[in-house]
Length: 580
Image 1 (cartoon, rainbow, N blue to C red):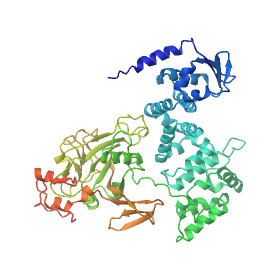
Image 2: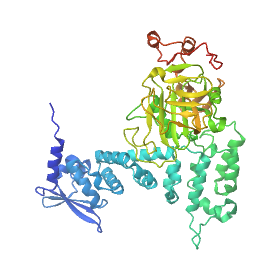
Image 3: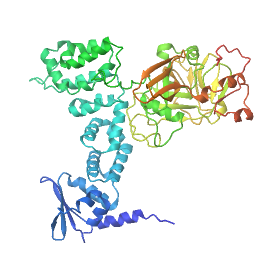
Image 4: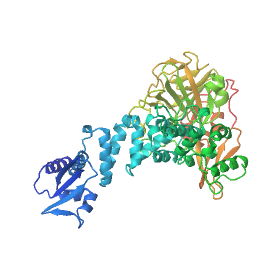
């Protein structure tokens, strides 16, 4: 039996902190303007802190009688007081300190090799001060890049910048960032933004670096057509360190002509030569051996008018029932989401839905509710079809991803991954409590339907009360209103990424709707191949052809975990029944 009396030990050592007997170390903290002496026990310092264990054992340590004199001028007294109390008690009273003070303590903890303390502060900030961190993101970006510290904070900063670059670009403080911090941002390979957009923001930053006119007005006019040669020269001087980090080879020729050619004087001649050589000789291989300025293409923004990258990662986690740590990110998820239909582009009728989405395997339906701006949707792990009955599955779910246009709020660490500063506060996922009614199959007057009432779309989805959400066969209700219309809806085919080993060339193969494959160079040893889930397609002929009612034998004979189709009326005309 082992008794944990850590709290008692912490209390006793805290009392020792205030007991001046046998304190044999004087730590002189701060500079001449802000100075304070702290007294401590060398045995405690050496046992609890690797920095002091090494520093106090050196022969060059200054002694005055029986006391060791230790100087630390680059840490302030207020910061070191928190450090020393932690060394004695292993506790931090977070509620007493503001975020900026904790960040200063974090820097000091890292310098003093107090890794557990640094980890604890980072966990606290990321889990409990996420709203502040996001509102002050540029300050955090600057501070995190200033020091080689705080791995979790840096990792989180980079993840947020890559997924939501506008949170940095649209910040008023972006224009005040130092060049090295902007370059660090441009070097990120996973930055999800079109390259021409990055260049446009960089132009704004470059203009802000040029001193204003004597009357205080900007040195360069917002209208590019009014720029003089002197303006362009000054802009080139401001941007010369950043220009090599733009991915010029991945900008469309028309955009190069309209946005880049008028500013050609600010580009290195060899860069311009490579850009034109690439576009006029497309047969040349595109790599760093042929083009000195070549850099791989960044991932493009996710193709959706409703969802963003973090939503997609969340859905991938739900599909695979991942919880806790080691959750998927947009870059690590094992799925591709292929847009099948969009209401504003293709129409909102149920017939259009079936024409474009039937027999396409697993899919995600997502919609923006008119009036409330809620993002609702559902996942069908089998496929869509017309008929009269149900699909039996335990793997479907319906969800509410919050409202579009909300300000980011601090997220609960219980909802999904820690350290993700997105507006997923209040998200809801609901799984089937009666799997035999999970997905409703109806005729062409109905679109996607989950449960007998839980989430239905009928007729023209953008007309009043043609969509509904009433709790029935799923665990929880997901909408704030029972009947509604949608302003937009989209359906995405969910395709598994399959890693293909290729020892000669590495390519990404994507399944096209006509069955052909397109190849994209990946520049690594593996390739990815889109493919529908095996469990969704395997033996689907048997499931459809033999679908009448589900009995125990049917449920047990499901070796590939294939979802079954229940109570399909095979006598009803079904022109959309798929041939597999």
